[in-house]
Image 1: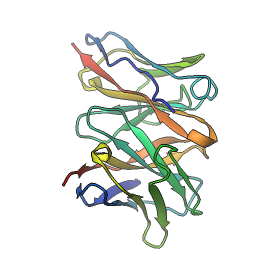
Image 2 (image 1 turned 90 degrees about the vertical axis):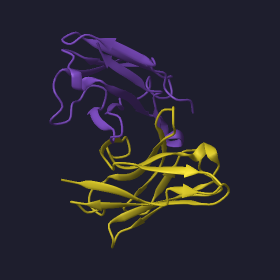
Image 3 (image 1 turned 60 degrees about the horizontal axis):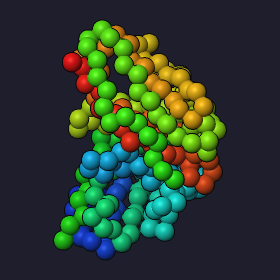
Amino acid sequence: QLQLQESGSGLVKPSQTLSLTCTVSGGSIRTGLYSWTWIRLPPGKGLEWIGCVYQSGNTYYNPSLKSRVTISVDRPNNQFSLNLSTVTAADTAVYYCARGNGNNRDYFDYWGQGTLVSVSS
Amino acid sequence: QSALTQPPSASGSPGQSVTISCTGTSSDVGRYNYVSWYQQHPGKAPKLMIYEVSQRPSGVPDRFSGSKSGNTASLTVSGLQADDEADYYCSSYAGSNNHYVFGTGTKVTVL
């Protein structure tokens, strides 16, 4: 059974960079045409797709966040990571990693439990 | 790219049915048959309930069904059970520029 687990700092100061890692177990990040995806849930709001990376290293980002987001894949460690720069309070959210399945027309079939990231001085 | 519009809340008694709408545009829901639905209990990860408008993943009860007409997709939960009480989100593929957009979320209450 595939499992995903987020890790990283739960508190980030304004203007700094948010960094999270998702560790995938029970399957290889190298197999298939899956996207490895970050999604967030701000308090009191709906889900927001942040972006994704494929095992090839190709990345796609939400246009509204593109200037601040970097997603990368670490194949040997079966992990992928999110960096979000110049954060503000609006970036406070529960951040989820997920697997996208659908050959570039994805639905998200496996999710991590989520990690709360607060932006505060 | 704006979020898909869902009603904030919906409710029904045990055994009844509830239908949640998800309204987008001709650039997302109306253009592509790649609408998915997710159930989220408080403090838990979202769970995939429907994909490609009406397909159910293995293990999801057939009480959950999906459909689409024009720019609006719908999720129907039949035979409501207490455990169906949760937040529900839709999502749609939105093309190669915007990729994926989610709905605003609907809280389903079982009365």
